[in-house]
Amino acid sequence: MRKKLIAGNWKMYKTTAEAVAFAHEYKALASNAVIEHEVAVCAPFTQLAALKEAFAGSAVCLGAQNMHYEEEGAFTGEISASMLAEIGVDYCVIGHSERRQYFAETDESVNRKLHTAFKHGIVPILCVGELLAARDVGLHYSVVSEQIVADLVGIPYTDVERMVIAYEPVWAIGTGRTASPKQAEEMCKFIRSEVTNIHGIDTSAKVMIQYGGSVKPENAKEILGQPDIDGALVGGASLLPADFLTICGS
Ligand code: PGA
Image 1 (cartoon, rainbow, N blue to C red):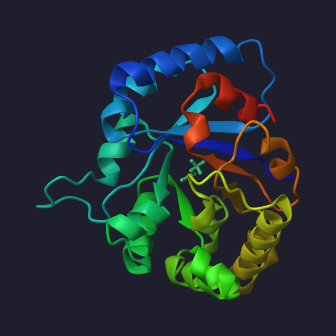
Image 2: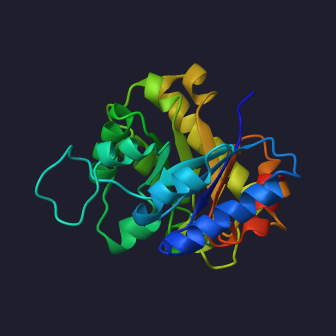
């Protein structure tokens, strides 16, 4: 039985004070709730240390949203994996479509980041997904297949088994237009079969595959009820403690 992971992706929202207030409110609400899934919050870099402290003693794990693939060096403005590991970051979102779209992230840099994350004991949440134009012409499976194959080059099965892959159709991110549970399940199942092709069925049965894109309290239960969907990567709806908690408890 695979566990499910609900990860909030806060993107470029909240000051540190607001982040800490969220943590306290979430913890208070969660103390009266039954939550069977693993929960993580992927926050901006400046909030991570304060959130580590604010979530201490709770089951909420901490994630970053990006990192550099080099160990260290003259890369002004960048953050390394060891800097994240030092804070106690558990997860790091890698290859989010916004980074691919606005910050020239490529499958090659994504792949290098995955290697570096594993080296530092950080579990990557690898994001893949097609643009609307690709889905409209029926190319969504081949786009996602190419991403999976390129992003996982050289990653041993022992690491793939403990990573997270998030299927995020770009047309469903922040648009309010969710993929139907059937569309989400079909692609997550396809991603699992791609992992089977690379590493075999034992590995693909273990890898955690999330859906992301306009997940809300109202649709979380049906999405999380699909057999190949092992959780959700939640943007907008993770910013309010009550909404996020409802999704975590779905
Ligand atoms: P959304 O974002 O839930 O606001 O659509 C999801 C994401 O970008 O991870």
